[in-house]
Image 1: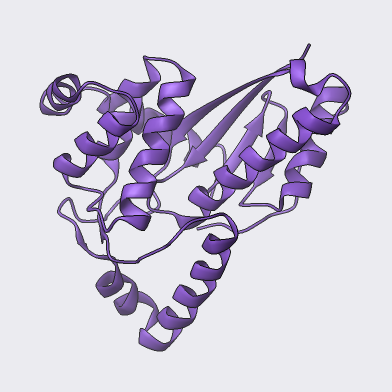
Image 2: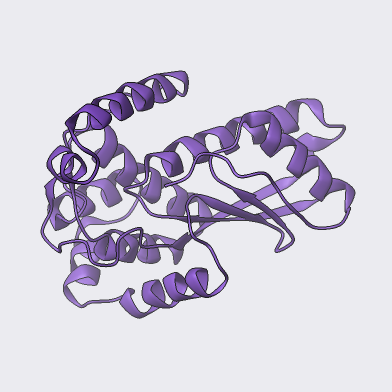
Length: 229
């Protein structure tokens, strides 16, 4: 039996992080069904914080407004069309109705979830991304963060207290600095067993190939870059 420890360096406002995790999940499912005795292997997925924009406002602003200012209306429409197609392939419905801003508090909620184990940690991060990308949520809003965390399995009052007391912030900042120091310049970035690295939201086949390489114990590798923010 092999233990796969998979770290996902991510920012919840990156759509490719949402896509990449879904593709990783599919690759794990395929691996368990097709690799000899693969169903007996364990997959432990955890998250490491990353700030795509450390200067983002603490109060959320409409994502369309911020993106249009950066890319222009015409290019933004093309980006929306592309993301909707990519999302639909994973069963997602990107709305682009959310509000974007600094993600430190969202990451702090994930830090609380981390204390409950990988299953809850994954559920909370996924819930936060779903709220932002598919339900028009404000990623800076404590109300949204608390609601998403509760959907992921945390207790409402515990999350509120955690946020109010500023807990998890130092850990988040340290994780972000660690990623920068190691040269991570785009997310998602996957690290498997501290040896194999995959940059971006790769195709399922690329993830599967890396999982098999990790299982067989070959030399470490850096996969080709996929879709990143």
